[in-house]
Every structure is written in structure tokens, then in C-alpha cells.
Image (tube, rainbow, N blue to C red; front, side):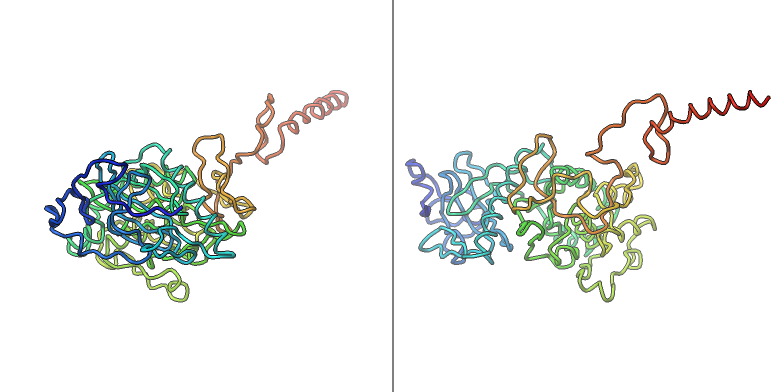
Amino acid sequence: MAQEPRSPSSANGRQPVAEFCPYCMSRVEPGQSCPVCGLTKGAYTPSPHHLPLGTILAGRYLVGRALGEGGFGITYIGCDLRLEMKVAIKEYFPVDRVSRYATSDLSVISRVGTSSRDFELGLKRFLYEARTMARLEKQPQIVMVRDFFEANNTAYIVMEYVEGTNFIELAAQRGGRIPPSELFPLIDPLFTALSAIHAAGLIHRDISPDNLMLERGSVRLLDFGCARESAARGTETMTVALKQGYAPIEQDQRKGQGPWTDVYALSATIYFCLTGKVPPQSLDRILEDELVPPRSLGVELTEAQEKALLKGMALQPRLRYQTVEELHANLYPHVPAAATVQPARDAGTPAEEPARTASPNGEPPREPAQAGAGEPAGEAPAEAPVRTASLTDEPAAETDEPAAETGEPPRRAKRRWPWLAAGGAVALALL
């Protein structure tokens, strides 16, 4: 059912209260300019498919101006009227599959056929990701999910609102580049946060300088509240509105995504911050790779750090670091080396992430009983490395002898003793 816009003064039958500025959600008296940002309500006109100003969702969340829009969602500034707290509200709105004319009806209308099926699947994944993020142990570097719900034939995620300076602006303030001595300590905690997110089965897929925010001296990673993966037909990963220069080649190919996808985007983001140059698009690098090493541009990195950064930006996923832990260990000399990763014999999902394979029927995977499993992270690249230890192998039977180095079962070693005894008896007979 459509939800009609309501004034905040009439929400839930309460007495009239002061209005909120649609730009910054500060309190403002009716008919007055905002005392904080100086803007007036009448200066903003939303797009026809955006929620109108003053819309109240779930009887609690007041919608302000649109902060941004991507291929799969619209983010609004909002206010939690119950707590009188500024929030960010992300609406699931895959622009290529739905439509809406908000002045007459707030309901999202999905297109028929394949687009309708993809919309329903994407909607489930959007809510699944929100639920997984909400259950995760709090990571200070990741924007926290406060609430999620369905309304207007779509879904919404309510997140904490982050105010600060993004890394594009920060680089500009530093004269176009952020020195390594400042950048590396600043983003160091981000690796641990991403590792936790990947362990839960989630992939960001949109790491870029404008999604990194410096808030009160700490780095925050934005825009985790949008499910960009759709396992239509069980194999494809649909991603739109890519940030060119930061999206790896597998996002253009719409398959084979995993933690290594975020490794590329994070490495490209670090490259921009250090050099002030947006890396060449991954597709353009196939014919002629014009990526200039950072040290050639005067960046003060060690040879090992430059090598690690460029490996993180390798075009082929199998040649890249497969985890953020590996990238971290090679970029930061003080970090212990990451565990050795061996090439897989067969193509497939990394063995440490078996729960990330999309189900054949296209439905989101059931939540496993074990903690730490999450939304499918997509299929691994054709030669994606995995750890040699299998999660499904049964433990070997206990024996008195160690297993042979060739991988033969331990019982083979025990069979040698009868032959040795017989050989000894023959030798004694000959003597």
C-alpha cells in the first residue's frame, strides 16, 4: 500500500512540533531559514522518482533531501523522530528495473518479466544484507545499520549519518596528495573492518575515495547498505553504476567477484590518495596498461610497498592478493605475514568461504548455523587460490605412525612391518 507524505507535526497524532531542515535536519521554525545551513525548504525540488520532502516512513523516519543515487538505491538524509537523531535512509530502487512518479504514488512499480524477477531477488538480498550487517559485531570504521523495513513495495535501510570530509576533499586539502606517513596510519584500522565484513560473506564492491570519510580523525567506510549482487540464473553478478578507475574487471564482466574485488578497489583508492591521479579504467588497461607506478610519480614508498600496491591492482583476479589480510601484511612492514595461499586444483569458491555460493534457484542462501557465514560473495575467479586445508575433509584415523608425506593413508605405513619381519627371518636363515 502506498504511503502518503505526512507533515512531521502530524506524525502519530502528536502535537505540532518544530520543523526540520531538509538539507541538514536541524530544527527550524516554520517559514524560517535554517539557523545552521542557512537554506530554506522551498529551495529544494526533489526528482519525480524521489520521495517527497516530509515523507514519514514506518511512522518514525522523516525524509529529507536526496544525498546521492546509484544504480541500485537512493540515499536520503533523514531524522529519527523518536530519538530526534539525524540518520541516513537508503531506499532500494534499481533504476533499470523499477519506476515511480512520487507526486501521485510513493509505491515502486517493478517492470514485468525478467526485470520483475530480478527486482524481487534483489529486494531479498537487500534485506538479507541489512540483517547481516545489523547482527555484526560493531566495527567503528563501518557505518552502522540501525533499522530496516519494507514499505512502498520496496525496502529501506536506516544507517547512522556520518559527517566529515571524504578522501577526495582530503587529498585536495593536502595539495592533491595525501602523504604516505599520514595515509597509512589513517586507513590501517580499515583492513580489520573489511576482514570482518568478508568473513560474514559480504563484499562492498564500491570502495572509492568518495566513500571513505574522515570523521573526527577516524576513517569511516560508507555505502555498505546497498545489495549490488543479484544471482540471476545462479551465476551472474549484476553491478551497475561502476566507479571507473576503482572497479576491477570482474565487475564489468559481472561474475567471479569475491574479497579480491574489494582488494582491487581499496588498492586503487590508496593509489589515488597517494598520487592524486585516478587509475586508468580496468577495461582500458587490457590492451595497454598505462598505470604509472607511484614511485615514478614521486611518492615516497619502499620498493616492497609499491610492489604490494600494484599487485593489489593486478588486472587478473588470480594474480591479485585474494584477501585484505594479505594486502595489509605486504603494505605494512610491521604486520605479520598472512597465511600462505596455494592455487586451487579446481575452479570455484575459496574453501574458507563455502557458504558464499549462490543457490541454483536464485534464492538467498539460508543462514547457516555456524557464526560468521553471510550473503554469497559470488563465484571465485577461474584460478582463484584457496587454502589447502579442506573444510569438508574428515579427520584421519588415529594411528601409531605419522601419515606418509606423499599423502597415503597411515595404514600403508603399518603394512611395512610384516615384510620387514619376514626379511629379517630370511637373513638369519642364510647366516
